[in-house]
Image 1 (cartoon, rainbow, N blue to C red):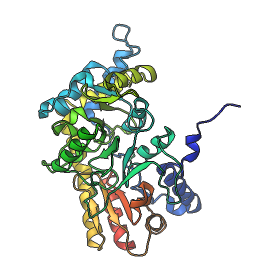
Image 2 (image 1 turned 90 degrees about the vertical axis):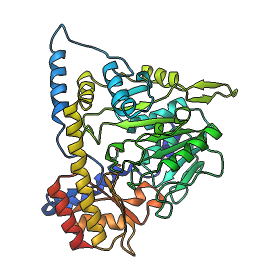
Image 3 (image 1 turned 135 degrees about the horizontal axis):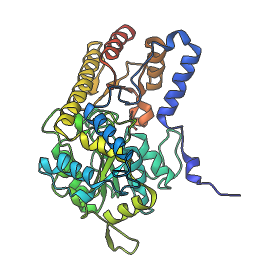
Image 4 (image 1 turned 45 degrees about the horizontal axis):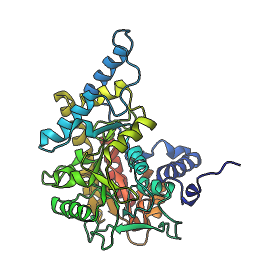
Length: 411
Ligand code: MLT
């Protein structure tokens, strides 16, 4: 009989968001009269329409595909040059950060890239992951065989968990021991925290000293309001030698359904083979993408490029303002009712301490049943998320106003 990948059998619960979906469906099936009042602030999924610049670019690209002279088949596996250049200029070089066009790898999402990147790393790496954390980093390491079994609290043997809490501002301490791959996500999902330049400098210096690689998820960088907060790990000197950065159009351009993202792999970044010989990771990731991926469709890449036009930039700015005004309202409502609130100032997530004597899944059930609002239980992001819940600011203004009223009435 065919053998399966045993590592999949180590995975504990189902993936967090399908599990939430299952509970919401069961609530809706059992309470059809309340189902239409439900407001979803669980998964961070955008609600506002696609920017006009992106729609127009996508439509013209479709028309090009409808004409013999301008038809295109397979595109380059790493992405079209027009988009790689627009990204390298718009997100990096225009801000004085060195990133070359061919260090950009266009993809269909940061969720996929943060998981797939493990293909180019060997066995035996010590993996450092924050707790709480975006569950994809943990689960993909389990699938890749980088962990042992989970213990009763759901922590996997072999992972170096880095607790993030109110005391450390949800930015982990530098490990005392050697770790090889370090996942950092700032602005953070789920806590909405940001890391300062000084904190990132310490991480870069640790990584360079120990030959570690930082996997920096900057999917929420567009939500940063405080100009002193770094948007890219490459703002830090030396980061090109120790970091891969993941970015996405999902949240800033409203592309969660359209699918387009990119990963930056600087050519200086090295890792060693089993004989201790150093190799650049850039050609490995390029090779991986050429073999397993055919990039993103032409109309989608044209739409992404259009986000860098003057109109596109203004439309993205309006989307960010919309969601950040929601975050602000959610923050002040939670504070008003006496809850401790974090995040929501440079990120579209508000991270809230549960009222006394209620755990995070209890809070999820209470909000679902009594307020008809879906939130995300902190425990779904790891053990250190227990005692917290996350409210996503991705919603319409009127829904957020209603959520604020319901929070006041329920808590
Ligand atoms: C979240 O809610 O944490 C995110 O939407 C998940 C994702 O981006 O995959």
